Length: 211
Image (cartoon, rainbow, N blue to C red; front, side, top):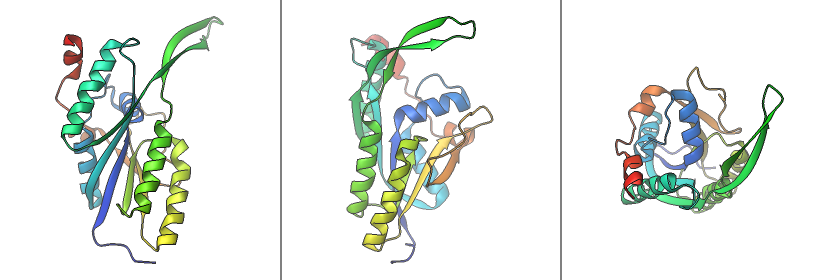
């Protein structure tokens, strides 16, 4: 097997909704205010990796289901694309969900669910490994559905006799309930200082209100 390369090419695979929910819990932010290009660059720089590509994945509500968030994501993704970020989006599917409250009553509400995002990330991580496009797969997510990807990447590395690392990065603070990265990967914790250095100062919420 080839040895560890002196310059490690890193591709960042960003699960947009997972990153938002983790940042909301850790830091209290109420909307996706991250700049994923800057965040991936900062993480890679601190690890001594060369960031070569950023790939972003998210679900988007249909305009008829949630006009405000539909236009928010439309504008944000367009900006990412102009920055050179590869963007993959799928419609959010809505369904009624019922939860039991402490007083014994039940409450029903409409919730959006992503379908196929984790599968698309997994396919791309594997495909780019086969094409030898990275030495490090940086997955910005805590989705344990991606844990088997790391095992597959190790198998590809053995077949190709290549050095490949898989890491998962995620926001964390004392307020975080989930303190685990993706199993079978190296964990990189994103603290408030790092996250706040990589905020997207554009307010897409205002653009969505005018659309």
